[in-house]
Every structure is written in C-alpha cells, then in structure tokens.
Length: 254
Length: 254
DNA sequence: CTATGTACCGTACAGCATACGGTACGGTAG
DNA sequence: CTACCGTACCGTATGCTGTACGGTACATAG
Image (cartoon, rainbow over all chains, first blue to last red):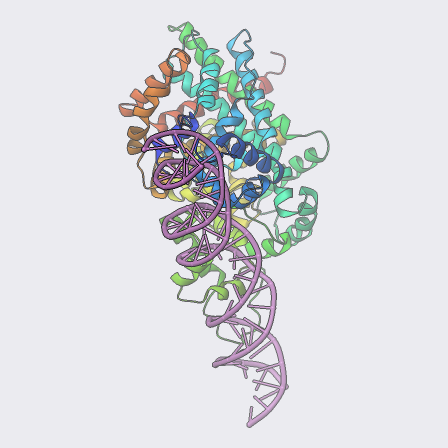
C-alpha cells in the first residue's frame, strides 16, 4: 500500500512540521509528545514496513490509547509527513570539491537514507513535505551546484534528476527485502515458483530479444550482477550528460 | 495508498495473467469473466484512482455480489496485477530508425501510458508483473537497442534508466490531478494556504540557495515552466550520457 | 428424472481511521 | 482550602476495507 500524505489542512500540517504549537498551558499531565509519537512511528515502520504502521499499533507501542495520539497529530497522513521530514536530518552534509563529486556524494547519502528507511519508498510523494529538515537538505544539495554556470531552474532540474534516479535504484536495492517481508516469499522462492510455469507459456520465438536479454540479466543476477551496478551505471550516464550541459554553458559558442 | 500486488501464489497469478484456465465445463451460467472484471477495475481506477478501487465497488459496477469476483480472481492484488499487464497493450509499437529516436519514442509512449492510467504510479512495483503484454512491450523496447554495441545487460540497464526517468516525470506531470482528486485541494489552493505560514517560519538567511532556487522554480512554474520541461531535460541528459557509452563501445581504444 | 459440479452470494470477522462524547486531574483564581 | 475549568486521555461507535466460509440455485451430463 502506498500511503498518501498531507490530506488535511496545509497550515495545520506545516505548523506541526515546524513545531509552532508552543505548549502554552500546563493543565493536565502531558505524557505524550509529537516527537515521541513520531519516533515510535519511525521505529515501527523501520521494523515492519509502512503497511504495518497503524495508529493502534503506534499507540500500543507507547502504552497509550489510540485516540490520545489525535491530541498531538491531526491524523495518520500528517504523522507520516512528519516522519518523512524527521528522517531527512540524518543525511550527511560533507562539503566536497567539484559538482560531480558533490552529486555522487548526494546520491550515495540518499541511497543510504532509503536503505535505512525503506518505507520512504512506499510514501506517495504526491506533494513535497515542506518541513525544516527537507528544506535544510535541499539547500545543502543545491549549494554544491551553485556557481558552475547553471541557471536556478537548471540546478533544480539536475538535482531532481539525480534524486529520481536514486529513488528508482533504491527500489531495486530494497525491493527484495521489503517484498519478502510483505509477501513472505523470497525473490528466489518466487522465481522458482514462477519459472516452470513461464517455461510452458512463454514463447521465446515470439519475444526473441526479451528472452535473450532476460536470460542474460537473470544469469548476471545470480553471479556478478547487482542492483548496485544499475545504480552506478545510471549515475554515470546522468553525470556524463550533465557534464555536457555544463560544458555548453561554459563555452557557449561551441 | 500504494497498493501491493502479487501477494498470493505466483503460479496462480501467472495462470491468471496468461489465461490458462480453459473454461472447461459449462455447468452453471457464467455471467462474469476475468476480462469483464479487469475492464471494470481499470475503468474504476481511471475514474477515481486506485484508492477508490475496492472489490465491493468493482462488483457493484458489474451488478454482481462482491464474493462472485473471487470465483475468477484470487484476490485484489492479483486483480491489480492483471490490470497492470492489460493496459500495457495499448502502447505504440512503431519502429523508428536510430537508438536515440527509438528511446525517445519509447519514453513518450510510456509517458502517455501513465497519463492515461495515472493509478499505475500508485502500484508499488515490488515485483515485475510477468504478463504477456509486459513481455511483448519489453521485447519491442529492447529490439531498438539491439546491435548497436551494447551488451545484453547494458541494454536492460539503459532501458530501465529511461523508463525510470519516465516514471519520475509522470509523477510530476500527473501528481497535480491525482493529488487534487484525493485531497480535494488544487496545487494552487494548497500553495496559497502554505505560503503565508512558510513566510513566518522559513528563514531565508538560513537556507539561502534553497530559497533563491525555490523562488525561481516557483516563478517559472507560474509562467513558462512545466513538468514537460523537466521530462525533456532529463531525457536529454540521459541520452547524452548513453551516447557517450555507445561511442566508447564503438571505438574501444579511444 | 436424477445427480453433480459450478456460479453466485449472504453473512461474518478482523482490521482500519477517526468522529464524538465523555472522564479525570493539575493548576490557578477566589 | 475550595471551586472551577481547560486539557490530556480514552471508550465507544461508525463506516469502511479484504476475504473466509457455508450455503443455494441451476444447467448440464448421465
């Protein structure tokens, strides 16, 4: 299941993200807090995936009634928004020389983020989460592209292109684990169950190139190939393309 | 919500995809069929998004009891799998000269597919749907990359890179419509509601590059900019990178 | 005409998010 | 010291979801 986020009032969500609530009065005995709820949510999603994240389970893991969460968080969608923003904080912010090195670093950091929190891939990125951590990360990632001849819009396009590739790669890298957890079947088991049937039904003569390439990829998958290769390959292609763009910008009359 | 697919027995799913059931006996009065159910599902998802797709609603739209669907389809996940495979059939298969032109054509066709069926973006691509339409499309898309000096695995990598970019772009292109349908808020309304709050909380001095670029992108978004640009931009970058790879393969001793 | 296998479906269950109407208590005003 | 009140917390209920299970009705084969 892909979770949707930000279903409610944008202002409410933003207030939550930026923690503008100012716990004013001290009536009652506040045992809970937004942060404790968010941490519990992240822990739960890390462990069992986004599908297993329910308000009941979050409350349970905090030893609290389900509805108590709604005092601090407008709903599940907003909770996920805050979870997304929160985990961005843990990405590295090293400054490296050269746009290519910077983008490579950014790509690796984001890949690591997806590895740590695979459920991020299950959150439908319908609308950007405009939280403080997201903003800080965006700023850092753009800074390494500043002053190399690209326009502002181009800087954004380049970054999005790289981050998009990282996300696609992350899906390949973590899909096995996530899907296994949710279907109870490893890739190998699934494949073993599928192959004998496919053999009876798949006409190699009808799809000659597909079957040849499919076999090659399958064999490579067992031996030397890895999704990491796909990540590196795509990144190289993209960076090479960007290099050409930058070269054009530097020597306009080429 | 991101829907998961292929939850059940792989062999069962494959039998369904390749229609191996051979309606043998003619007892009873089969009113329903897998195809009718799938078409109803696609119509429903096209109209109201994947979130609105429920077995109850599919049955209702066919004038049939909910449980009757389970005679033909093992479950919701498998139904979605078949829906995914089915819509692939509608992509164009024109043969164009040159790998670059071919990939451009493939990219456009896939983008159009996502436009027609935005719910495809909400299906978690945990495991490839190994259906006949998917296979045929894969074969066609690879054929245009055959014999230009790439290895089999490289052909697959190149294709995946392009298709991944298309998917990312499609998200940007259709996100507005989909999200609006599901949240009841247009991008403009959402932005208008967010901006005044952001102004009070977003420290431009803290995130100088982010705010500058963000503003530039925002302004461009209102005037000349469009997600289409982002699609074309990324495609150009990727194809330029691939061109370099192919050049290397053609003149190995560069 | 009877037997049988199948298409279809009513009911029920477990799980979900969350709206609503309370309850109990800590801090403060009188 | 007491009375009040705003807040934290939560029990219950509603309307969704997918689907397991047991049954019914009927077309066809024998």
